[in-house]
Image (tube, rainbow, N blue to C red):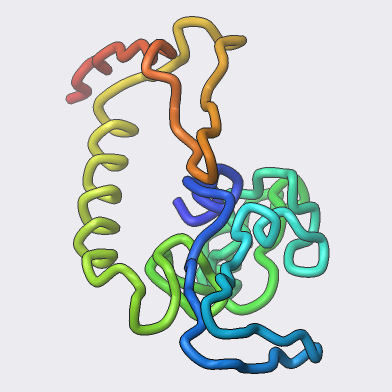
Length: 163
């Protein structure tokens, strides 16, 4: 889920803050009272300085390498991209902008993550899914937000129960 959210962020600008007093950033830039500062999660998530092959979906990118080795050591792991860096959780906020930053980070992120995981588990175990039109536009941007097209249809076929 974290890799999917990294590839498809919900906004291009986040953590908007207005300066109440002057301060200086570590690179020497100054921010004066009344000026706005924000982060650019979409740019950060696709930056080669932060992620190897950032435009490529790698479903195991954030998996703990120990867990990865335990489950895939017996298989041909040369076809599966190896996890990189330290493992991290979907709800992390340190270097991850999905939930906001600092004290203003989403307090409901743990509940939201649990609901998303539950729904994802339900969908991938109970249904086969596909886009009705694989070439249909998936999203559009309005200001800094990125929305899915309501007209893009997903077809769900219930899976047969196995005994």
